[in-house]
Image (tube, rainbow, N blue to C red; front, side):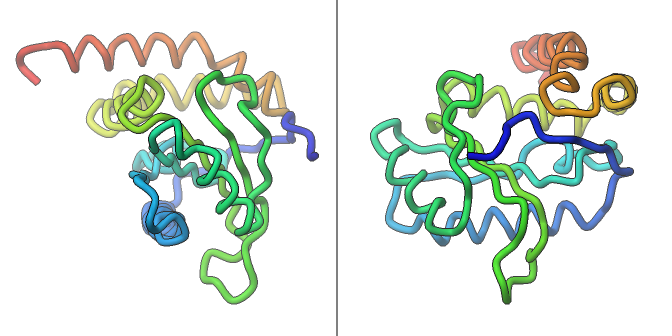
Length: 182
């Protein structure tokens, strides 16, 4: 198994990430046909204008009873399964090169398999959507990401250094979601 703590780098926002995310989400959904899943493009590449690791994150929501079948099908598409990778309730898979003959060939991808409409499903979409509608949060998060990437060029250290900012933004997103004005 590959090392989870892989080197990271940030790239300026690429408007093509939205189309790649849709394409990859559709490909994953097609591969999981017959299973009760929902698929969404999440993460920084799903937020216009946000600096990001140039890796598309796809979230698959499914009943817990189908998670094993989802993981097996994705492994059949050359996704590497890394277990929960430190996040209880999530099965984490990644592919760092594409499949021959596909337009997303070479596009690095992470897939997060979580309980459909469970806490992780809801939180990941809430975080993404909050950033999409709050430019000041995008600026704050981008600064935290740059700071973390400069000081920790590997995934685990980078994630740890930006965790406080993620927690702060997530709290604001939850507060906004609970607000009757939204």
